[in-house]
Length: 179
Image (cartoon, one colour):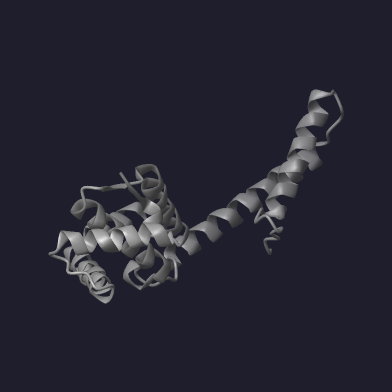
């Protein structure tokens, strides 16, 4: 038995079975005659579909998602890098503030993307809180500031980069605003 999936990802086989069972129940409500054989057939078909769905779901769960670790996910890490750059600028510059709603929406978007990739909330939180990964991100962020001519210890040079990011409307600049 093969599952037939439409373009929306819905299992048409189970949909047909549900429609058939709905029609059987509807016929009974209207006083229509429903033979014992058709009811028995509907029950068996539903049982087969349920068994198929359970076997399919359990085999998919046992196999697990085929994916790399979050450290290997370029889109997620680039997003976290943007947040790291904007956060460092925000913390270093008194005249630059975060666009908090945009930043939070972006963070939630990254979490949603990671979950769509098959990662659990626990895996995402563990990755975000991992000290080694945080250190790698700090090093990447600091190298970026150095490439822009800023010193990580010099607030004014970071503020200059921050104002340039905002003016360019870079991804990090979109998460910031001048007060």
